[in-house]
Image 1: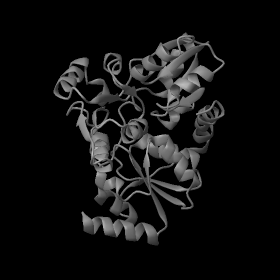
Image 2 (image 1 turned 45 degrees about the vertical axis):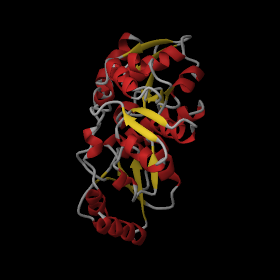
Image 3 (image 1 turned 180 degrees about the vertical axis):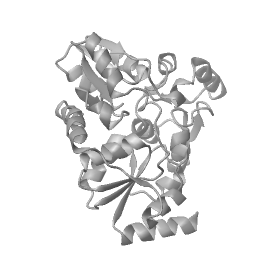
Image 4 (image 1 turned 60 degrees about the vertical axis):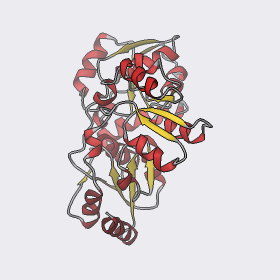
Length: 303
């Protein structure tokens, strides 16, 4: 790995390339990135970065978001096979049909959606901004897509609004159950349980803290507690063990693994830099202009 890492660091400096890594990437991939974090935050970092070429170590919708905000930059997805089951669960036509049934409902799209799906959304949200944005919207009725678990969490926090939810979501987060939490708490009774709102409501209800991946990491780093059960993708447990060697971190379940995130390797990043791998992302300008409007409204409402 050290040889590959050194080659990556050398080439990205020579070619003036910005490397982004989502928090669910492996520690090896994160170690060569210029920025590590949640998907939308990375897209903003890329927009402000001086480099004209960006390598996104994440999944396809994340690379699309980077391209949407930085249309004049070359954006390369490090592993072309890295998709997102949640982002690809619904297409534009399905949501347009649902809108016909609920014409007075504003469409709120989680950032974990394709560029095409964002073209039919009224506003975009992240897991950390969803409650704030939905509360700030003047619309009373909200069609929240695609994650039913995040949508349920937001609807509970914003009871003054009417929510319609679809049966979409993250397969990895959705498979853990309350029994997994009780088992982990029994094994580690002094540990705080930190969870992502993409998990099922019965799992989220048992949490000591609910938040985005970045929120979970910040909470654990700043807390005066020393033991934590991590209820999100298991790479976060790995990163926290590196960041906070004086604390103990336990994965909620060994099933909390995103296969799409795990397929990206340092070798993939090196091939992108060498020009022999990756996939450049292109978005039709008409699609981009329509899709970016929901992100602009998110920013206007305080996201």
